[in-house]
Length: 197
Image (cartoon, rainbow, N blue to C red):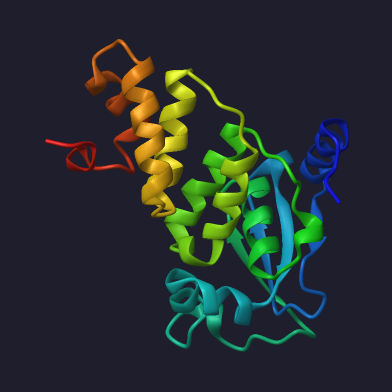
């Protein structure tokens, strides 16, 4: 059942306030995500993370300290201070099939934060459906910065159809030099050659 906009907003506000979440009740890892007041602890299963991300597979494999002696009775805490706690919570919830912990609607900046971590941890294949659902629920826009964030997300999730549609809208609605938009928003993810010759 779809939630109303007000319910979704309340859920997101509540999600962002929580500092400890058991995504996997028998998880063998606690991800300590973020810094200071924004820090969030997420109890997760290394099995789910490793099976959906090459980066997590390496991190929690036998060659790194984080992967040694993992067990659910004494979960290992792994600090991730540079990551966005809300975005990591959404990613881990989706990877653990805990859709009850994922809001129905996300803002463009929230989803962009998720896309950045999806790129970092190379788990776009497992989360592509989340991107497609989010794009279906996103209202049309002509704002160039919003379109640029949508374009980066489409690129990260390897969605050629969405990428083509969004870049078309960007061409139609953006009247400044593209190099400026590329330098300000896009350059860290989308190579210049992906935008054409």
